[in-house]
Amino acid sequence: MKKNRYLLCLLLCGFLLYYGAPRLSIHAEGAQGIFSLAWLAFALMVIAGNLTGLLYSPKRQGQKPQVDRRVKKKSRSFH
Image (cartoon, rainbow, N blue to C red; front, side, top):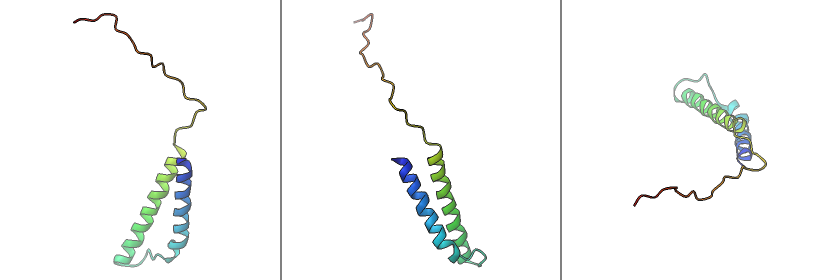
């Protein structure tokens, strides 16, 4: 289930980069240039985080090993 979410976030981020990157002016001065660089930096962080989650998530096993949950009795009881 989480892998689907990571993939969806990657696709959405890719779409936003495809749509927004041509409209950003990196070489502009002042607030416009700072905003463009910050926006691209945050987009790269989103991509890196989702790729990390997608690639390094633990593998699912067919069956989980069953844990022995019997109650252990104490051999001695001091009252």
